[in-house]
Image (cartoon, rainbow, N blue to C red; front, side, top):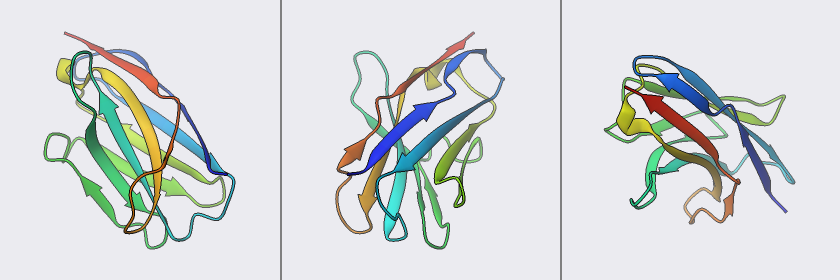
Length: 118
């Protein structure tokens, strides 16, 4: 069973940076895509970005492109979301999710709160 545990959230001023981590366990992730999503109060969950475990191809939402970077550490089975130039509108609970490539995300972490103050 896939388990995902996020960490690294917190409070940061606008313009600052945070790095979120997602520790993945339970199986080999070579055929998986690991994604990041976020949900702000009163809003629907939205896609932030994703990385193919095999090959490392990354994908980003337009709203974060150029500011956020996703990477992975195969040895640690961990995916990272580096967030730079943060804006108050980035405030949300951030979730890590896993999907077999070509299928829906079906494993989710518990989420970590990111708050960006103006």
